Image (cartoon, rainbow, N blue to C red; front, side, top):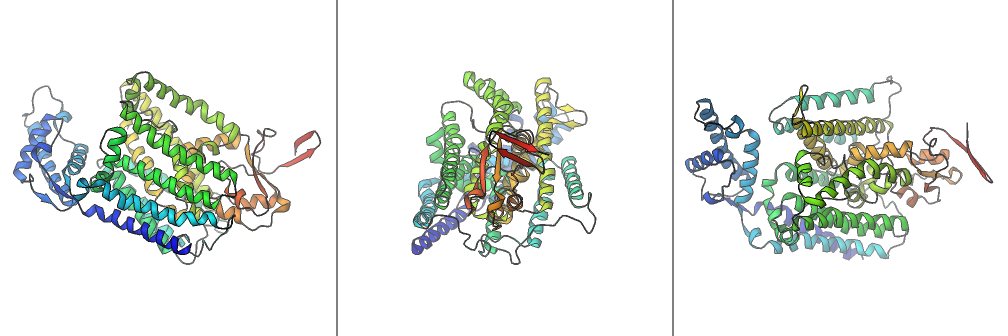
Length: 598
């Protein structure tokens, strides 16, 4: 069995090397008939400058060289258009920014034309490369996972804190990654926002305020909350994996022109499903679904002694594959809007953006149904389902983010920070994100109905652009998944997801769900706390015999699954819904009488 698993690891890393090396196989060549720009004023000048810079029929060996050459053309065209407008050469009746070329236009033109200029062996034989990457990776994963079904049932720690992949980072390395990521996001955000400093400065100030509130508020030097426990030696394999994930997400979100080899590889699959060529988002959706399915099998093998885990894992595999990937692509094939029926505002933060509202309202009966479905799910579905089942109905059974965290992220769940300080950061950050999402959405809706994007001194377009960059991309992707091997698998769900914050508020104060404890049987082994991905010190509650009612708990049930004594149970009870969030409680249970004692 070990030999089979070693072969599987070898096949997986072979596929990973090929997948990464593919990025250097394409060459790039701009052709006159391939430069397609709808704005005729831009198009004429750009084509003229392209002739001057002699980029036509020149072969570039890398996407970076091609991008640099085309940006030189665009920058020169931008200057010419600005001079023409200042000198009154622009056609009459054309507004300034319909004629001039802003920095946003340059970025869009550059990305789309570098992608169109790509050529090479992958475009000629995409399915061969698909089999060499996805195919080998899937086969390797299955060879590694299948032997696990024949092992002894039950949870074993298996030296998770000693392995170089799952040990985690020392405090200094963790602080370095957090600091570098925060600084990098802010600096890139300045460029992303067209060198508008307002929103990066607001974010930096908010970050400093939260740090001050957590570290210094109501704390003296002798009574500060403890920082997180960290290993003495950093898990170097985990750090390498984290860096790879972070680079992948940076390319995916902000530099798609540099991953044309990957999108070319999956284009035939995209054509078969939706009738369109693949974008980076199709690539991501396909990868996401494959990973959830393969690593979901690993979850089924690991937790096969627990029916709850079997059903829960099967559920997230189904919802990710069917609702988040296949159904939206088939809708596009049928000339309907791309729509994920399980996505909910505010996680689906662009649901109320004007382009989405226009697309849904102009798509006939199905589009109107999608719009009404999304609104009802947010306003009625979330509180109703959360009242009966807690936030686990979504976060652990339906959500794609949770599905990836529970499957691919499961080996890193023990790295979640259990310290009091981390919990304080969690409360400020996640509810701050929810507040940001609400304000942004209200501004967007005001602009949609009024036609005015300026609200006091703020522009709703800038607000939603910054939210999409900071929360929708940097936090949810780069940090949320890239930090799996560094800080645990639910960093996004715990600290950043606004929907998790919304669900959590309902769960804590008005839900039947709780995890009950039988403190008399607890042997303080700590398995429950070790495996809690949401940073809850479950053992602390179990030792006191206190029910666990935390807004962050996603009800994954792993704490119960790994408990050797059956101390923990996931329950939906209606006896004390209004009082169960009290810090200390004593419940009197007698025949025909269950009541809370003061």
